[in-house]
Length: 124
Image (tube, rainbow, N blue to C red; front, top):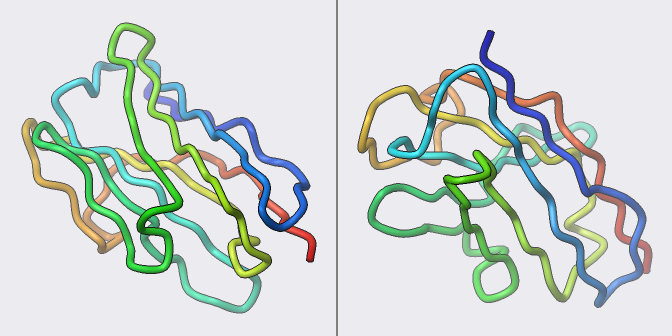
């Protein structure tokens, strides 16, 4: 059974940092694109960024503040979030595509597996 499990969320003051982790199990995603998304109350799920075999891509709203990395030996993808703002408050999800060497996508519909999400709350 494939599972994606996020952790590392919590409450942080504006300007602070958090690192989210997404541990995968049940199959290997080392050659697959992995994405981070977020969803705030009353809003649609939106892309934070993704990592593929060639590199990373980020939403403009987080560019320069957030960094995605992966440790294939640990089956883990990370989202390092710095200079957090209240508008970053949301449930954060990791997602995986099943296409090997896929490019990733800003569209949630193009991801095949999802984690349960972890809450990030940034206070002003």
